[in-house]
Length: 317
Image (cartoon, rainbow, N blue to C red):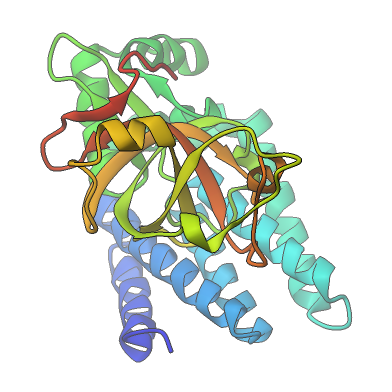
């Protein structure tokens, strides 16, 4: 049972109503309500999907896709439409109407991302410029403030300064659209798409990225070792606050050297390569549960202090 299921449903409805009331009034507030409704819709859609209630799951993924699209969160919307098509492809006996809506939505979003983005964002308004910044971060699967200044000018034919990019990036992080590591002044921000609540992360497999969450259960002992493939010692942790599920792998030597810093409930930012579940079996760790993604961490940062726990500091986009 999802905790506070009824409350989540009620909050989604309330935020969608609030967003309507801000139409032609406060664009930022409207988008924030839509983003919040979309994030919660993804959460409850995954809950229904896990419990084989495909109809309700599809309805909420569609709500999320539409809400993200209306708030100019194009890549988040694209993820929802792709997830909807995945659900249909697993069971083609029903939901054909939803399939058509999802296919049309994905086609529309792809066209904006690939061809029409220049006309999509209203750069005369701050909210349009913030959304355009978000678009570039997602389009590049992560970047830094120096590169983002150049990308903004190249793609939108407008100049923008480093300070403005930093302000927009911090606002996007507060709205849970991106994750930042780096700074303060004098050092660039490293900015990555926030994949924590993404409907599906398939488009981001094999890419370096940054995630944040709370390290909880150590699951290493839940995996069997296939000695024919095993060549790398890993510690495996569950990361809470991530939906769909995500596991974090930590190099065994790094874990042992920093064992005093690891504790249940440690909130971290982790940089590394995002992989599909089968990647663990490729290095010899097998389990019957494949309902998770994996981040093979190269850098681990204490969220509260900003201090490095282990790994390389010099990461790029």
